[in-house]
Image 1 (tube, rainbow, N blue to C red):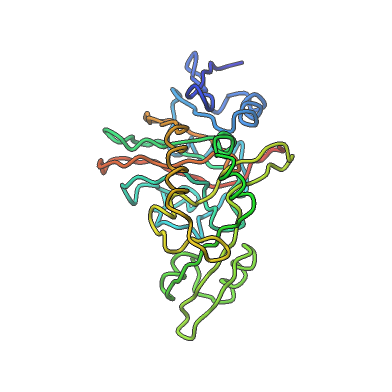
Image 2 (cartoon, rainbow, N blue to C red):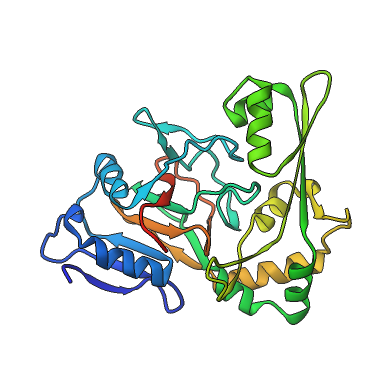
Length: 293
């Protein structure tokens, strides 16, 4: 092993820590992949990195990089590379979620890079969806295993063109069809999209279940768009219990310059603490693993 390691916290992940001034590009790929498959989230710390090295390192382990078309937020492109995006357009806190779980096709893997941490606060939060599911009461487990959620969003023409990065209505139809999303187009070219999903996902191997979805930030930022599939409201006490579990299980990533975070987006939820420092610069890449498992 050409690095040292220690847990990110008592409950989640591993830190891959530089030893003997090791070049991050020379780390043993097989060992990193093995650790990632087991833990679901790795934090690389103490290596000499920049945006170019971040791109090169993530390319070693990943494929099918996405440009965030259909994403919920505005994200600034970094150095002209549409697959490297800033996550600093807003400074409020964002609750735990799986990335882009408001559509069928999700990035299976996420990478974060700390170009500059906030002077205080602004931590990225992480939580294992397996642990979250295990912490649910029996009543909530039964509820979310039986009842689907329904996301309904209205957008005018300018909004959907910006969100989906196209002005072609046929391309929009293809995107929605690919994502199992119902699309209604109005005469003025405004639209309504409807996506139905479970809050709990079963692993490909079928051995475990994970609570991973976009429920908490949606109820935080835009609650009127999310209900159960039968159009019944999600009770306030359910959201309160979920937020309580989230805070108990959340681990904060207190960023250091050059840190790289590797996340399994089928298992690990992430979020963010609020911050006020305009110099905070955290970048993200959305992709799939270039290895099996």
